[in-house]
Length: 117
Length: 114
Image 1 (spheres, rainbow over the protein chains, first blue to last red):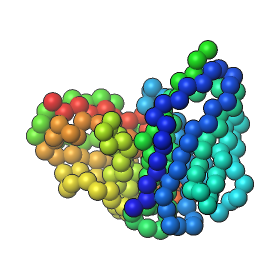
Image 2: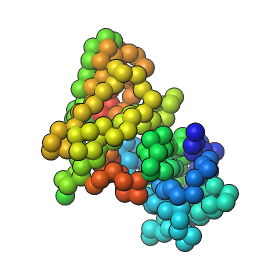
Image 3: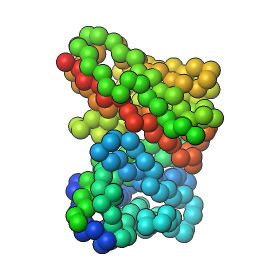
């Protein structure tokens, strides 16, 4: 079964600094999608960034970027110029369409990010 | 556009009761997925509905069921509640549920079973 692993339960960063959150996944597929979601204390899940496995170029959304290493099955999230509003739980997720057991978001256990002023 | 809405936001039930949660997707979205979030098990997929048909189902007992209406609104029902059903239930909508589409989440319904 596909699994998503986030090995850092908690991370902290100083405001305006850069932090990287790690994610690894296990799959034998070559075509899939990866996502980072943010869940602030309000509990509403918000998409931060997504990556298509067939694209070699790393996705970027403003201060958020990913380092996608397909062969290593690694998908880390880099947050630059951290802001207090970035404090939240961050979930890495995998989805592989076309198969019932993977055609859904499979989430990691999450990383709690604290941002200090 | 209005986002995904879920009602009620909070719910307290006792063991053995049943509960119905509602989810209204973003206008134009026809796929609705449900997830359960607990501290112990994390985020787990319950089921997905598209055009009033269940398209995929997670590994949950038959006490968990759902349906989707012609306007794409979805409900999930949990019968014979157990203490372990206490969780945050999230629904997410997308246009057609295809894997590359972004799923937009609602604020969730927090269920407490006593």
